[in-house]
Image (cartoon, rainbow over all chains, first blue to last red):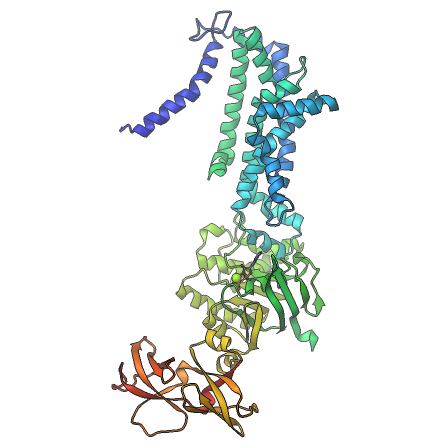
Length: 259
Length: 359
Ligand SMILES: Nc1ncnc2c1ncn2[C@@H]1O[C@H](COP(=O)(O)OP(=O)(O)O)[C@@H](O)[C@H]1O
Ligand SMILES: [Mg+2]
């Protein structure tokens, strides 16, 4: 096999990305009481610990419910927004576009700070506040990826459906939605990842007793670098990767996102 | 009278961004008629069709379908069919589902859907292709599915927007005759948009020639070709030459005009043109005879010098410079005599009935 410079380069990049993940996974098997890499010995005790750790599992559960709810909301809202923005004569299209895409350009900490100020006043430092914050955070990804799908759509296809007797709602349901589905799915999946892994916004909005998993891990690492943290992280990583693989098989969404 | 009209546009105008694109279109289409909107690209043909289809609304004027004003009726209530330039088939549905779409939207019974889809696909000679997806079909087949899809609902009017322009020349010819055959068979009113004069001439019962948002002339193909009303129509359809002239004598059924070349021409016309009026004259390239300079002099001939002689397959094309410096192109079906070569002096004879008085 011939090894080109590009493939060596690609390999190095992959290694840099994967290495920290492998270190976390490796560290979760250590027999020492503190996180160590390479692991000393091999044990599954830390997984047992993690699974019985109410704060960690509570965080995981919270993360999952927040992510699923936020993704559901932002997928629906984002798709509707994108369809509106894609119209040639969208009222205030340019302004709305930058409004919806703003969170992509503003540092997450700034968004988080703004949300903290607002949500403290509105008494939203709770589950609902977290969901709302994550909707704000994930909406741009849905809008963007649906807009990409819509841009590739021949508008005469929708007109054809209309003149064949389909009301605008049925045109959307029978024609537009099936054709932009790859974009919607891709947007939803990216949103899930963004929400599930978010620290900066969640740190501000969550209250000490009930924080999403990444925040719990973040706090634990600061005070108590126990290998159970690595175990919980590994569980989250494995769950994420397998979900991605299944979805990729089913929808080829990476392809549709970057075609 | 009005119930024999499938479509009627009166004073239809449309602007985009304050630019007037359609400037008062009046057009009546009879039931069962095949009418073409012919004009150069950008003249507003698609805009007109989109207004008829209900994809946009006119700024002024009325659109009547079967006598009913439809200005404010949404597209999906107009009961029309449309074939698009790109096939615009639903890529996620197979042929059957594509053709069945309109019937399903009308909540037709399954048995009726099956028989109507079968009929429509048979009409376009695609029986057996029900399970194929659009991407598995050739360009011509895709366009035929598009036609079947539009016809399956038995629309009041079928709108076609340059449906053949993406096909290669040979396939286009074949599809033209197929379309003619289909129209003859089902007699659905068709409004066909094209910028191809030959297509319009061969397919249509009548042609509406459009120019810059206006309708220049509405007539049968023969009428458009033989009696163009304006210089634009004469120029756009077929090959024509133009000369200005002044009427010097008015006879019953004809006038004598002094051309800008200094020569006189006899022009047949029923119009009563007083002496001294300025007229724009035109003559088709294939309605001119080329005689050698020493032939017996007849009234109404132009003398000139041959600039070029080209054999173009089905005809000979000769370019002649006349006294005023204009170049007259002549198309001959038979080879001109051997002495008609570049540099030679010739006389161009134009029969009085072949002169066209244009606006
Ligand atoms: N939606 C639109 N917005 C702005 N200008 C348009 C729009 N649709 C068409 N036009 C303009 O109107 C003119 C006529 O267009 P069209 O009807 O498509 O011409 P044709 O079909 O005869 O080629 C063109 O100059 C085009 O640029
Ligand atoms: Mg057009």
